[in-house]
Length: 118
Length: 117
Picture 1 (cartoon, chains in turn brown, cyan):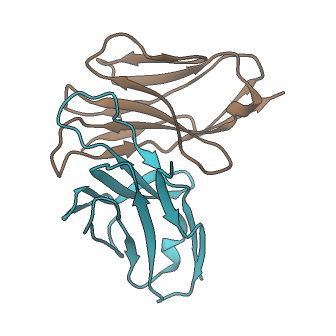
Picture 2 (cartoon, chains in turn orange, purple):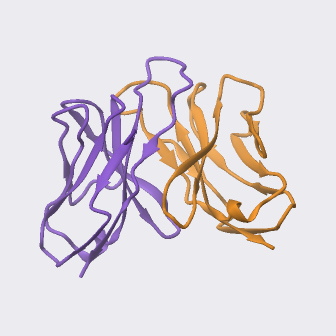
């Protein structure tokens, strides 16, 4: 079964600085999708960035970028120029592309709570 | 532009009571799922459905029932509430996948904070 691990329960970053959140996963599949979700205090789950495993190029969305290392099964999120509004819980998630009843699940990691220091 | 609508937002139950958490989506998504969120444990999958009439168990299904009679609705039933079911519950939906697709992310409802006393 697939698993997702986030080894940093809490992180903090100075405003305007850069922070990297770690995520590793375990799978025997070669094709899959990876996501980072943000959950602010409002509780809403917000997609930050996605990565398709068959793409070698790392995904980028404005100040957010990933370092996808497929062989190492690592998927870290880098936040540049951190802002106060980035303070939130961040979840790494995995999804198989295979539409089978036993495989088509989205698996989440335990989350990393990010604080931004003014 | 409703997306995923989840009700209620807050609920307090007494031990042994039953209730249904409602979830509806208007995006014609095949895939719907229920998660519970507990501190330090992330989101854990309770039940999921890949289409109307098809449901399957996730990681923590005990004490919960689901059904999927329509594409739009995916209610979660607590049969006999227990304090261990105190949690925040999220409903999510996404497109089913038959191959590589950009629209693969899950869309979430706003969550239900459930307290069982």
